[in-house]
Amino acid sequence: MLAAMNPLAEFNHATESEALNLVAPCVAIPAWAENLVAARPYSTVDVLQHYASQLTLDWGRNELSQALSAHPRIGEKAQGIGKEAALSQGEQSAVDMQNSTLALALAQGNAQYEAQFGRVFLIRAKGRSGEDILGELKRRLNNSHAEEELEALEQLRQITLLRLEGVFAS
Ligand code: 2AL
Image 1 (cartoon, rainbow, N blue to C red):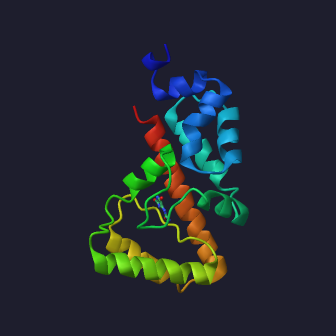
Image 2 (cartoon, rainbow, N blue to C red):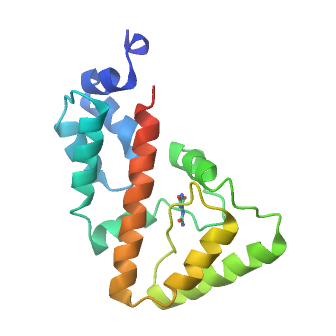
């Protein structure tokens, strides 16, 4: 029965806990997934995406640190076998860790970023090469704490909404 439905119909008709399981891997912020599930049913995927995007506008420093627990460093494999690990690996697939110069520069940049800002460097990796990411990392090291918090939150929103697109692609 469920298998015959498209992903949106499946989400609309699922039990609360099944519906949470579908969207929770998009971001480790339980309130976001709970609010998205509570507002079912959605008439179209566009309506769902728009509401999901609106919910991300409430995020601040606390949500950022919550979410980071589920994001491995750029250039490092996600731990575990959960959906998030597989998603993360796909997103980072254009980062060529066989290139040892790049791998070293990313590791050094990550360490400097963490010393400076006290959290893991977060960037929407999908569509970006390792060199692009390194360039962004170096640029963002010049940000103030306030500027960088806003940039990291914007990247988190992009990662989340891209993952959500993947959930509802039929
Ligand atoms: C990630 C990740 O896991 N996926 C992505 O787009 N970026 N991690 C990170 N530290 O930025």
